[in-house]
Image 1 (tube, each protein chain N blue to C red):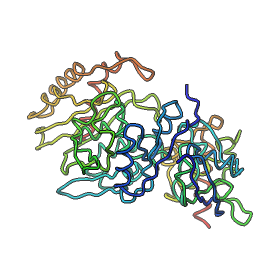
Image 2 (tube, rainbow over the protein chains, first blue to last red):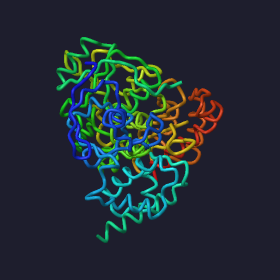
Image 3 (cartoon, rainbow over the protein chains, first blue to last red):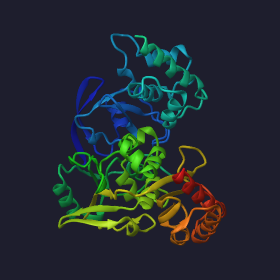
Image 4 (cartoon, chains in turn cyan, blue):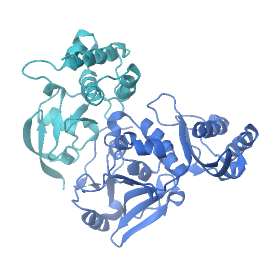
Length: 159
Length: 285
C-alpha cells in the first residue's frame, strides 16, 4: 500500500487520516494536524527535538516513526501536558529554573523529562543526565535543564 | 548527503508470522524488513531505496524475553532494547549484552529499536552484536518451509551481509544458559557516538583458571570477529599479567582495521589489545 487509513489519538483527540506510508509521524503532526509544537531537529535520531510520548509512557522519536504504523496509538505532544489551563510541573520548572534559551529543544526536553519522572520520581543527577543523552541542547549547557527536572521532582513529591 | 526525506515505497503490514512469510516469499529482496525502524529509516533518508518495507509492528507475539535456567534466553524479534535494559535476568546472567544495550543509541531509540534488528543490520560496529558474538547463540530464521537456526559464528558473512535468505526473516535470537562471566566495553569519541572500537568477552572460569573463552571485537574487520588465537592463549590457563600480555599481542596481530571517519587503522590496532584486556578484567571483576 502507498497510503493507509489510520486513526491516531493525539492529546486525547482521535483523528482519522489517510496518510502516505513514507510520511513520518512528525510530518503528520506538524503538517496535516497543524500541531507545530513538536520540533524537527536532525531527522536522523540524534537530537531528540521531535520526542513525543507513546501510550502515556514511552518516549519515542516522531521523525523515525512512520505515521502509517501508528494506527490506534495514543500520542502526547508538549501541548497535551497542561491540565485545566495549568502547566505540567515539568513545564513550570523549565520556566522557573530558566531552563530555556532559544527554546527549540524544549518540547523534546520536556517530553523526555516527563517520562524520566514517571519512571523514576526521584532521579539522581547522574540518572537525569544519562536519560537525557538523546536530547541535544546547544544553548544552555544542560545545567539549568537538570536543575529544572530536580525541581519538578521536588514539586511533584510534595503535591 | 542525506536528503532526510523518505523516498517512496510500498508498506506491507502483515498481521501474523505466516502472512509475513508469504509476503517475503512474493517480494524477496525487493522488501526490507522493519522492526523498530530506527536504523532502516535513517538509511532510507540517506538514500537507500527499497520497493517494499515490511513492518513487523502488527505481528503479534514477537516481543518476548523468555529465560529458562536450562535452555537460556530467547529474545523475540520485536523485543525492544529498552526491555533488555530493564531486564534483571539480562543484567545478572548476561552482563555483556546488558552493558551493550545500555549504550546502544539513546533512551528514545531504545524504546523502538530491537536487538534482533541490530543483529540483522550486520554492521561491523554493532554494540549488541559484539556482545552476542561473545556470548554465543543462534539466530532463528522463519521461512515458508519452517524455521532454521544459524549459529552466530556463521551468521555475518560479509560487510552488512548475513546468512538470511531473502524469503526469510529473523523471529528470535537464542543465547545458551550458563555462558560464564561476561563483559562489554567500547571506545567512542562521545557517549552517543557509534563505537570506534568495541569488544565483548565471555569466560568459563573454574576458580582462577579459564576453561573456555569467547573474545569478540568490532570495528576491526568487515564483520565482527572472534579472536581465536587470543582465545587459545588464555584457555586452560590462569589469567595472569603475563598471559594477558600474550593475549594482547595476539589480538593486535589478528585485527585488520581500516581508516574511517571515526578512527584510524593505526589507532585501532594500537588499542585493540588494551581494550580486550580491560574487557576481560571487567568480566572478572
